[in-house]
Length: 117
Image (cartoon, rainbow, N blue to C red; front, top):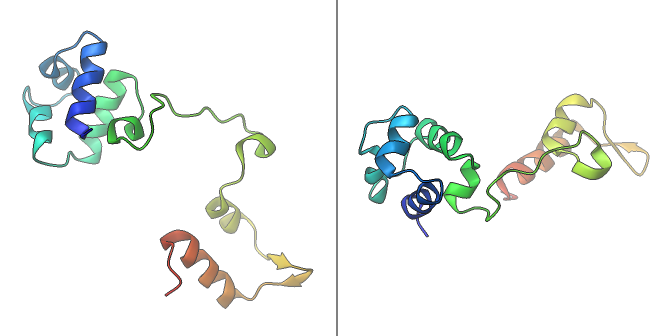
């Protein structure tokens, strides 16, 4: 299902036409129809998601959950974002030994891009 299709279906379930949805999101009346052939901007997509009360990931088809998971603030429940962890923690260790800065950069690059080289 395309972004356009999912947006149209969600708008219909909310009782909105695509033109009403676009207007409420601050877009031109037929802006969403353009999504049939073009990728919407992040700003436009976010605005429409807010109007429809769903997550951007839902409109993109990345999830079937309309609403993002609410975080509890408990790392044992929510997990830990390694990007935040790397930025907040200075020295990291493995088996009691400090991980060299060069190795940390490699680990970070692999996690960020999913590629080793």
